[in-house]
Image (cartoon, rainbow, N blue to C red; front, top):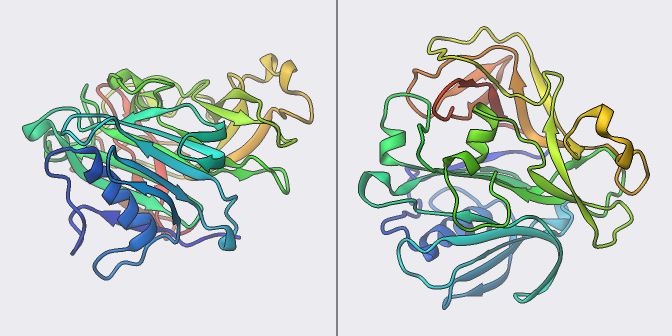
Length: 319
């Protein structure tokens, strides 16, 4: 069943703001969008599991009544000082703030720097079961182009994948490009992986039998494991097709898939919700955010990094 998508932005009426880049500010944004709502916007319908002020800790469960797996997004920080990075990850099983299992890689949410380089222009695109979180600096957002350069914005996916297996007991995933670190560079962001490199072995997927055993997985489409075109394509894109993005075990190469030709870790596991790769690049020279209507549906174009032109779009209406 497709779920409606809601888009939340820092410039909405009543939206929470990031001023100093404190962990509590980013967690407040997540809680407002996923659980409480703000202004005239309702929340995505997630619930709070734990919310602790000092040191900052927040865990949020997706909506089981609307088809969610009950997986939990977890955010923590050592203190609430501006510049302290958040440790973020997802888990399928949550017993307490100190006990979880079937977990993703953990990754940072960071303010990056101060002044015009502080990540404060946030965007959440999500449903009752999954969401994308982006947060850019003034420097990136006001550059007049759809690219992040070599700076470090926040970008991640947390929630249920669209499993190709009925009753999959381990649908809840999380990834950002960084793996088990809370300090990263621009080459460890999902924006870099999609527009400069390739998203290979970018996440962990757990077994289909429900046990706490995981293996790396990658993103793959009919265009292969690259999601960009070389060079700067600033003008309009000549898009005639949008292809879904699949989650495949290992490095996604079929010829390397022998370890995943089994019922515990099937090679082709799921579809990444709401994400598509286009057959044509464009709009790199257009100011953020790049939102276009493609075949009657609104899509958001992920920014490119420093070179090349990304071709990844997110559906803004339903997943």
